[in-house]
Image (cartoon, rainbow, N blue to C red):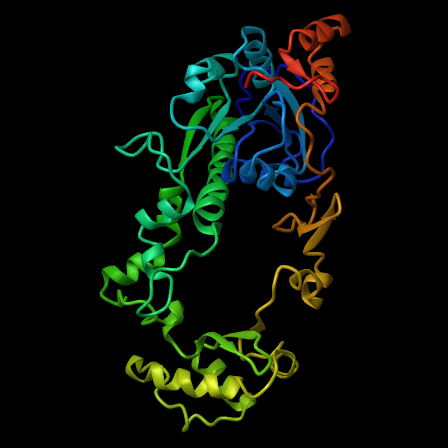
Length: 406
């Protein structure tokens, strides 16, 4: 294996998980890039977040909304990257890293003097992960946007919602997190694996619009073969099929069924007291609206818990529709330790599961600059130099007065 130039900078902290022994430098941002760093940290990477020196006053709405769980598992150093000394400190961090993650508009990191060229010059095997909405190239590359814009342009949003109504926003899980942060984490991991053999780093251009389209691969294939009806609620898994959908129960709650296969469909009908003769032609799309009304009437006859007691765990392909408040207490989630409590907040546990190198959350979100002194000490800076950098506001720690000029 080609190891590339020797790693410089910080000693690696002991972590649990398959990525233990790797180092990632993350530039603090919003949404998908922090989620990618969360995934890498959950899997054992030693992630160091480069935060801005905190400004005076309370965090704005977006800043407050995206801190907490998305920041778990990292250490934080607060640096003025517009200062030459601060920029040099960041490059020293990069010299000891396997990957870098940033989520700014194209050109921002270059203007700061921290783009791919100087970073790869300092650390040739570095994987430089970039997260944007539109990508690093293309006519919209410099345009502002958010999740709903990217999934709209990717051909996703138009197909989500009820017949005759407008498209429905599916939270921001598709663009920001599935097609964004998770795609970036996958790309960074793939490039790190390649760098172990080649000794050469590269740039990973992860765009939410690309990732959102990628998640629609099956639907694009069906559409290309003429097997997808462009009208909403006309297809098997968009709410059109009576055997794949959500139904209201007697207590105003909801349950989900997904009995696609004929054998599972037969189990469902038998358990809810219907015969196949009453709901014939499972795959006759013309009959779906009427069959859906028939099932809706049946599900309204019992409460969600009564249906759960009857159907859960069977081959009817059933699950109650749970809220975020309810899901952690579900017996299956409890048995698998699917949720953890970090800093008093219940949140999803690291996934997937590893038999030999289990992932774990070993710390909650760090305050900006919480580990500045610790990290600078590990870089080899003497105490008097750290004090000088603090006094000059090149870096900041927990006790450093906030900058008022940002």
